Image (tube, rainbow, N blue to C red; front, side):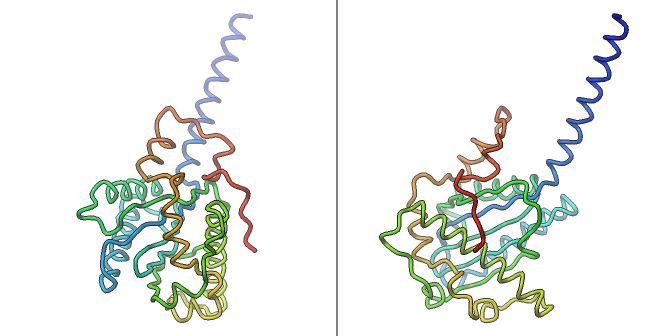
Length: 243
């Protein structure tokens, strides 16, 4: 009997190790979506340096982790930015660490005061099929207005929904035209209601509840942290529907 119990324990231990290895392997290739807002430190004419920075980061991630590309959309307003990134677990941490570095070195940073609007984990598929950058003019960033009476939570929810609708618009445009080359005029044509206004980004950056990259890494990527089911989306808000 003792021998049988020992055999069962060994089998359970081996099975546990196998499952843990499987979970660790799967975790590496989970798909996540990160949405970040920030202020620009560069002038209107130098915004291309921000795009170049993220193109360089994307290439660095792909070189060090083949098959783990970053896709998403970088919206560059005259004074602010909204960035949506879809990537694997390890790539997500690389992006967060880069944001933390920018945050901790404001004198040489391209963006200032980055704040995390949303992190969604374990997505079933990518909404953004490539990484793109769109530079918005003053008029384009004001096509829609942000209501001053709208509370911060509703404004955050509306902004995320607009970004998701914009992602769907890009996806449908690419598949209908068969082109992967995007220009602002083509993307924004008949899609003004899905571009978050600059005033909304400005207001969101005033929200004290939004975490900085450093606080997010310290809170959710510490060794003792055990993710819960409720953390499949941060912040823990109602399920965001694309309507």
